Image 1 (cartoon, one colour):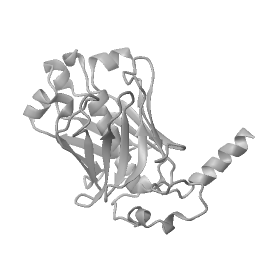
Image 2 (tube, rainbow, N blue to C red; image 1 turned 135 degrees about the vertical axis):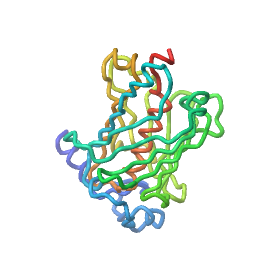
Image 3 (cartoon, rainbow, N blue to C red; image 1 turned 90 degrees about the vertical axis):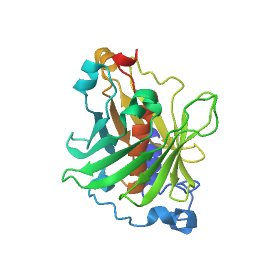
Image 4 (cartoon, one colour; image 1 turned 120 degrees about the horizontal axis):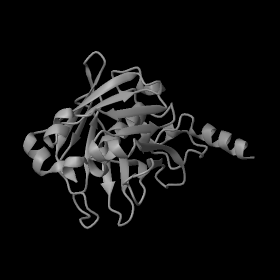
Length: 259
């Protein structure tokens, strides 16, 4: 019975486009005008995202920052399930923001493919990050390709759990991301579940992998995994990559220098 239920759930996810009220409804997703922006074949210059069901993000260790105790620009390798690098992400920010705004700093992350061509741009403005301040919370803008806005990741106020919403280019909610009450991840992975709008169905997750006590305390090099259906819209996958960067800044941007 459990196997049959799992098969039914997977069948419901096939071809699922976020924004539909429920993937188990009989009406096709194309009948909802609000989904049309996500069904278009956007010119995302990559052949990798459409087929991936696991995206691994590895933050590179900055030896200069470790030695001097300073915060340097983040750099990330984005890999497939085989560990092959498909993208490289570099943070652009000024030293003043990294020093005095720390993990709240405004920045731009430029994601390039292996040929050096920029394929995704993630813009993060300076915003608040506190459950005591329900206004002006965190937000990311996702461009894929650069110059074409395809979505946003916005933080939603909640007194107990970290909650976020993935939105399309018109700022219409299409997916929710719900994190755990405790995000320290001292001795295990930290999972942020990706859910439908009504939160009845979990379609994926963003996990911060525990990399050991020494690495977690003495460096700020983090490892993440994004688990999604392989046929999920590529623009949503791009937004989830941006969400992963946001979570790194908000919850895991620490090192020995910051203790």
